[in-house]
Structures are given as C-alpha cells and as structure tokens.
Amino acid sequence: MNRIPIWMDCDTGTDDSVALMLAHALPELDLQGISTVCGNTIQDNAFWNTHRINGLMGTSYPVYRGAEQPLMKPLVTAAHVHGENGLGDVELPVPEGAVIHEEPAWDAIYACAKRFPGELRLIATGPLTNVATAFIKYPDLPGLLHSLSVMGGSAGPGNDTPAAEFNFFVDPHAAELVMHSGVKLVMCGLDVTLQAYFSVEQLDELAASGTRAGWFTKACNMRAWKILSRFGMPGFCMHDSCPVMYVAHPELFEGEMAGVVVETRGTVANGKSVTDLYSDKQFPFKNAFVVLKVDREKFIAILRDCILSIG
Ligand code: RIB
Ligand code: CA
Image: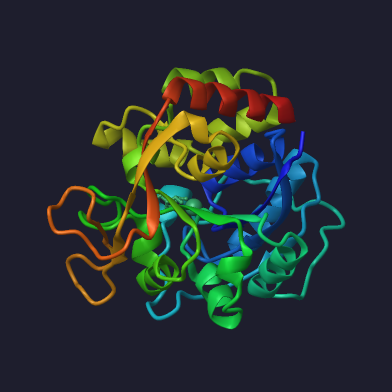
C-alpha cells in the first residue's frame, strides 16, 4: 500500500493526543512530523506534551515548536477543559533522549512539503497560527501541499462562544488568511466533530483493555467530562481525530463545497466561520469542503482498534 504522507500541527491537548495516536496507528498514513501551536494550552505544554505522547506510543516522531501567541489576539487557553498541563492533568513522563529541533514549525512544514511535492497532507488540529505563518513566509506552500485538513470552525453554533468554535476563536486572523490562501482545504468543524464521540461505556471499555493508550484516552478526558456531561453531551467528542480519519477514510464522511469567511473584526461573532451553505446569498467563491456527516459507528470502530493497537 502506498502510504499517504502527512504532517500534524497540534495544540496538544487531550483530543489532539488521541488524534496523534490515530495518525500513528492508521496503516494508510505515514506521519512525517509534528509541529506544536498554542491554543488548548501554552506552547511549552503543547510541545512537551507531544513528546510525552511520543513516549506513550513508543515512537520518536520529530517535534517542532511553533507560535507562542496567536497572530494578533492575546492567547486564551482552554485549561478548564484540557487541564493546566493540557493533558487533563494526567502526568506522563517526557521520554529519555527526546530530540530538540531548533527549526521552527513553519520552516519544518515547508521543508517536508518540498520533500513530497503535491503529496503532503497537512492536518491542523489547533488554531491555525503556524499554518498561516508558514503560508506568509512561503507563498508557494499552499500550492505545494496536496491539501490541508483542519479541525476548526462550524457552519452552525460555536463552542467557545455561541458563534465561534475554539480553534478559530483563538486565532481568527490565521483562520481567515488560511481560508483565502488557495490551499485545497477540508474543514472538519463542529458540524461533524460533535457526531464523532466515544460513549461513556466505550471509553470505559478502552480503559479496561489493559493498554496504556486505552487507559490514557479515558484518563485525559475525565476532567473535561465533569463540565461536558453537565451540557448533556452524548459522550467524548474526538474532534481532532476527524481530519486525520478523513485523510485515510474519506468514504466515511459527507460534506459540501462552500464559501467560508472567518469574522476577524466582530465582537459577538469574532472567530465565526460564516459559510454560504444554508443561504440564498452565495459567496463568489467555494474555498472549502465543509464536512457535515460521519458514519459514527465505523469511525469509532477504527479509532478504537487503532488506540488498542498501540498497546
Ligand atoms: O473546538 C474543538 C477544538 O478545540 C479541538 O481542536 C480541541 O483540541 C480544541 O483545540
Ligand atoms: Ca486541538
């Protein structure tokens, strides 16, 4: 099988960690490297947490530091969901011999794209600050990539404000720049990621599997569950696993091309991804494939098997 080269840009938090395990374990994918961005937690945590997930998986994927702050807004983290340390306050060791790369995220992403011209799938599971910075510094990068698949935005309501999804709210300027970069873009927003959840029983099964990966998947979500269960959420949304699964198994998903613009000046709607999916008035462009549906049963079965395969 010709494996698909991918690069992950994460604000390694809890669901980012599960997405990294999925990216590692899916046989269709060939993870080339990981860059870290501020978002769920500060850059330092995102960076060392990614090394910690390498340790949990027994891998040594290269990790590159990116932005310490969003392009223009002050950083607002999600410690109430992802804990002070970004991993739901679960303690994991940094693996011995973790290699520290001095090259910044945007340079490393570009160098990898040059190695796989037209083939590299960039997958972003946090605010798009690193991706936007890379596109600013390397204007040929959007055309060099096969595609960019993001977890972010929402054609419907938000989760950080009534209007905006967290990743786009943290850095709306980066999201808006990326939306109009010309990159082939797949947007896995809340419209689909809220369907992609482990039930409490399924998470308990993972934890009872006797694998560290299964144990961690439940443990890191326990802090968030205290809040999310109060909102009547059906389970633990694996938001960040959606763009990863889409790259390997697009057949599990449905969506539509749409015009998408991100609000950068508003107050109430700051960070809102405005799409023309449901309006008579259409934007004069279709710049993103907006994913709207997933076969949850198949999604969860593949994700579960991948987590258990890590051990
Ligand atoms: O809105 C969900 C997104 O915000 C996910 O990427 C989660 O990790 C947080 O970053
Ligand atoms: Ca994330």
